[in-house]
Image (cartoon, rainbow, N blue to C red):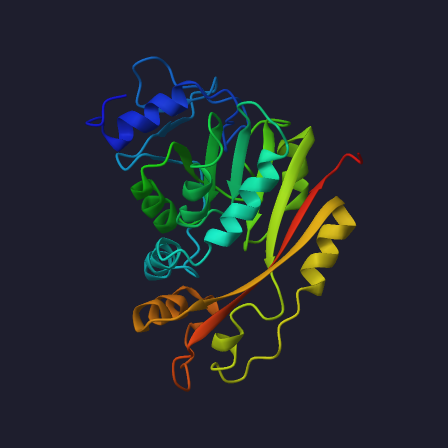
Length: 281
C-alpha cells in the first residue's frame, strides 16, 4: 500500500478482509462491500470508518473517567520505553505458541501503545485494538501500526464467537464471559495486572490511599481460567521531570488528588503476567 494512502484508506483495506466482526445492534455479521466506506450487516445497520482510521461500534454514552490528557500522557510513557520489558516478555509468550497468522485482540487497549509495540514482533497476523474510550482509540491511530482499531465495549465485544487466537488484557478490566466466547477453543488469554509495589512511589505521595493488593483480581482469573503460566516482572526506571509528570498524569489514582513530596529518583514497575486458557493441556 502506498505511503500516501490516508488512515481511512488503510483502515478500509484492513476491514475489507475481515470476517469476524458483528453488528452491535443485532449481532449479525458485518461486511465491507467493495468500494464502500462503511461496514454493514444484513439488517442494514451501517457503521462508517472514521477519517482517522477507526471504527466506532459502541452505541452508548462515553465514559469520561479517562480523558484525552491521560491517554496522551500514557503515549509519552510508552514512547520513553517504560514498558518495553513487558512488551518483550509478552511477545516471547506469544512466539512460543507457534501460531501462523493469528488473530490477536487487545481488549482494553487504551491509546494503543502496547499493541503497536507488539505488532513489531508478531509478523503476519490480524491485530485488533479495542477500547471504550474514543479519545484513546483516536490517539491509537497515530501509531501507524497495522491494527484494526475499534471503539467498543468489553461487556459486549463486537466479534464472532471463537474468532480470536490470542486475547491480551493489559492493566485493564476484564469480562471473562465475553473473553471465553470470542476465543477459539484452543485460544490463549494473556492478562497483565499490577503487583503490590506497582508505582508505589506515586501511591506513597497520594494521601489517603490504602496499600494495594491484587489478590481479588488474581482470584477471579484463577477461578475462571486454567492457569498455564504466572510470571512476575519487576524492574525500576529512572525518572526525569517530564517522565514523572506523564506518569502521574496517566494514573487514574491521581485524579482530584495532589501529589505530595519531591520527585523520586526512580519508579517501581511491578507486574504479574498470567497466561491461561479454558482448555486444560
